[in-house]
Image (tube, rainbow, N blue to C red):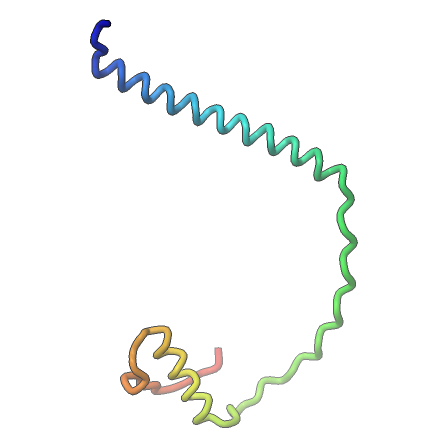
Length: 96
């Protein structure tokens, strides 16, 4: 059997990969069309009635229990950063 040259092997490998990718694309398109046709035939479920939205609450100007709030924020930041809570200093808290 004759020895195959390097460039021939490379081109055959690349050709095989591209043919395989083209086959996958064709299969995805065909399956999409089949699923789309099936989805058109089935009726969509009726939408549930929307719950009434709660009345807007005016934003309080003062944070109740401010020390507890600062402690909770500090603990959340320390947990997220993976550090000790004693290494965190909060200088100010502003509502966004």
